Image (cartoon, rainbow, N blue to C red; front, top):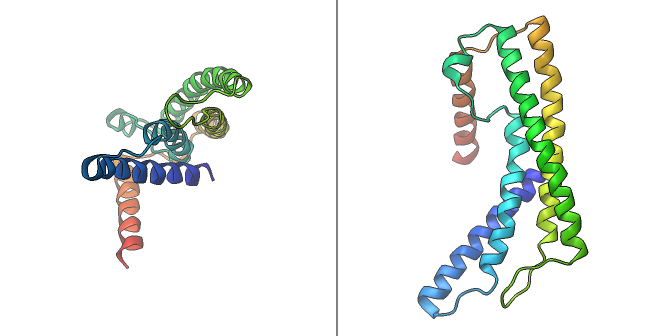
Length: 176
């Protein structure tokens, strides 16, 4: 759901940006509030996609070392990175919650011709971060189990096949 919200934010930002450029260049009239809305949708775009990327395990890691390790070591490496991400995003959630509540209390909005409230984007940040932390906990317990018990080893070929499969399904979906 939050991925759809992020995608909608991307569409809104793109349309507003294009309309602002066309309006400014051809008609000498920019779209009022385009910058402010685009700034707010950046939060929606980024945090709408972070959880999805974690679910798919598409965050960046050094495959050169990772794929050469055994399944227990891979599990330990993943569990450690999950734990570090939980700490980082937990701190972000903690502060973002305070910021969102304060923004709502003071009815914070942008400056300019059109005043756009900023608190909805702050709450999207809180929601997106919360969902990411939930997914990180799920992954942490899975990876901790892999570190303790073992499991399937991920090789460089597995990573390449997964990525190629994603590309093929994307091409097939948009081909016709």
